[in-house]
Every structure is written in structure tokens, then in C-alpha cells.
Length: 154
Image (cartoon, rainbow, N blue to C red):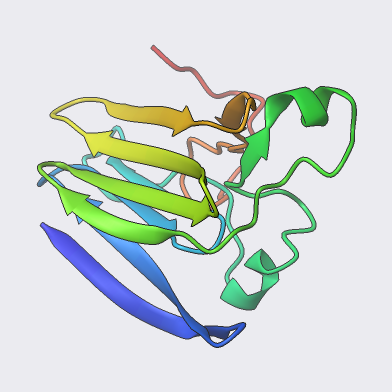
């Protein structure tokens, strides 16, 4: 199931949050920077919780000062040089997946988020000679209810 929520306009283009659901799991992504805003999973008590850090004010994704959920050029990140790829992406709905594509001239970047029964797959494609990745900060207690010192992940 897919939900699309209009957030605001930036550079005369609509910024939307796309939420892909498969029954028990959800992922939400902005078309601004293909930034992940939420990964929602059931906790140990079967309550759905967002386990990623995010901005509650979506306009903060314009500059994304803390790099929350952002798409990056890994090589530039290693060298601490303008690494956030905060472009405007077009979104295409696929089966159990969302494909975000940025293109300019003959260059492109595509990111495909696929939500299967128990996994999230992120696939990167481009012709720009860049190594793509994401910066995602997790808090497994859901919505930063406690610090991460006692978290266990299997």
C-alpha cells in the first residue's frame, strides 16, 4: 500500500513524503534528496514504532544540517566534502518498491527502496561515477524514548 503526503513547495516543486507499507512494516521517503524520514517496525510488544531519527519540521530537510536519512556520495563523505545529494527526485511506484530518480542532461541517479516481508532493500544506480549510500541514525526504542546504550539487535 502506498500513501503520498504533500509537505510543501521548494524551488517551485512539490515536496512529498511517500510511505510504502506491507502490513507490518513501513518506510517513508521524501522526494527531496530521497531522504528516509521513517522506518516503522513492530517493537517487542508488537507496537509499531519509528526507529530512525528524523526532523519533525520537514523544512529542515532542505539544508539537512544533521544529515538525517540523507543520500550521500560516500567518497566525498570520507573526504568531508559537500557529500549530501539533496536533489529533487521523481518517484515511480513499482511492485513493493519506490524508485526515486534524479536526472540532469544525460546524467542520472536512481534509488530503489523495496520493502519485502522482513527486509528493506536499497539499490543504487547512477552513471556519475559516485558511490552512493545513506546516513541513517537508529534508535530502536522508537522515537528516541531512551538512549541507545542498552539496545540489542539480532
